[in-house]
Length: 266
Length: 341
Image (cartoon, rainbow over all chains, first blue to last red; front, top):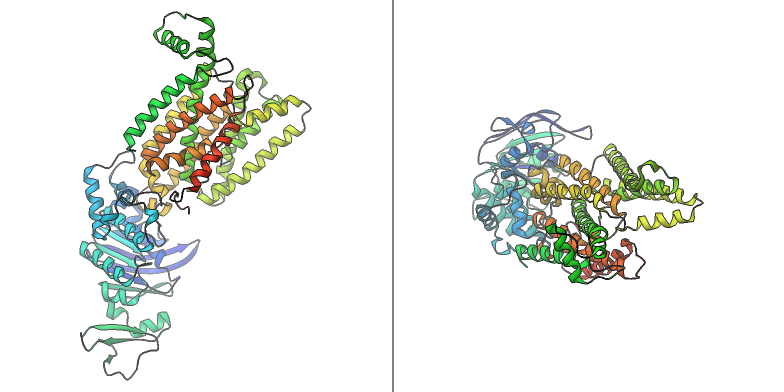
């Protein structure tokens, strides 16, 4: 299902944080939302999940306004992992992941055999199948993040909305997690801090700046040196690795402006 | 231990304890005589021994039943409260319900209000005070930004202190020295007044509360994992919090009205249940309820026999037993609670 924002304005405690937000994410595409701290990434994410209603405009999924969906229907369509979410320490990992099945059954029902299968699949997808019976309190920080992602995967939703999913993860697990998400083939929107990660692992990047979407495009067209300098106040360049021919985003003052491999824009 | 085995064990232990406990009291009875009375009463045949019949069926029977009901109810209320405020130190009295009941009971004892209601005056005064306190705490929390855990805890603690002061004020200005003693005894909890006509209301409330809580066990699990997680899973967080608040308030109000303020059960028993069967509410709630019932039966036995023929307030017994249990629990390194360290 296609995710679409039209003229979205978001307020927090009566103050406008974002306005005129237009976004389109086609089915199975991955969109990264970047911007400095306080630029409204989380505010936008919450509007996309339907957890907060925009002050103006609409967020729709498959043509349905997410703010008008009934809570359980919404949760079956959209899975959301918040930024500083930690699992209940005394739940087992499998029990924590099984919370993702709540939208799919009434609150008094018990999960059946099929549910166990879904939970194990979700844990396998994040590489944690072997800790299914461990208590969440005994996991490392990175494992906790992956358990929360597994919970969202067990929701089997159309859309996955992740607020800084790679927090607390080392590089290997950052890339692994985003590859996992990619393999699922579902629509993904994620707030991301690491611009290189946004550029290499996502289909599109939306840059938040000055209370609106400055640009939304494929990573290399969105994250131009001009945009990065304007938004982050940091000099940047696209540099092509002569060995692999791949383009990299290089930040800061550390690069040599006369480097022959440096390109203004790919 | 597997959940089913534990459940069966608890049911059998609780039933056996309830029967055996009938033999204990200011007048020790033979267990055989107790079983005779139960047998004749339950089959409807005439009583063989008048004295045994009176003590077992009329005096101790309702008291043991009330202990089961109050113990189960307090443990349920404690488990729900700990989930509502996501705090391992929460007990059923956190939201000022018992302090409010204290004001109501004190007003009845000291000022003689509701005097026309006879034996029901104390219970109804306490219930009115409890519900009034709950409405006040709810109103203040809601007006100041919603039923979030921190807001609820702060409001509850502040209002409890205010209600306690009000009770103290009432006691301070009475000339009747017996009134002070009565208030203190009531505040510490007792089942000595339990009689058959009083069994039904608390029984219904405890059973209904347990059924409602079990009816949303999955939502309670989600709420225990955090409000944002729960909302993302389609749980109506606001409605669930209001429901939990109402449920615990009515439950605790009714229990306090029939038994006074018995401490520690609602705090310790849910922890023990979690230690035994994990954190999911569908196993914690039944285990906590049965455990609370079992615990309270023996607490009441101790209260009856320790300084026979005098009775000790139940709150004294639960505190003396509960405190060591809680310390042992805290000492276990691997024991944690949602959000706790």
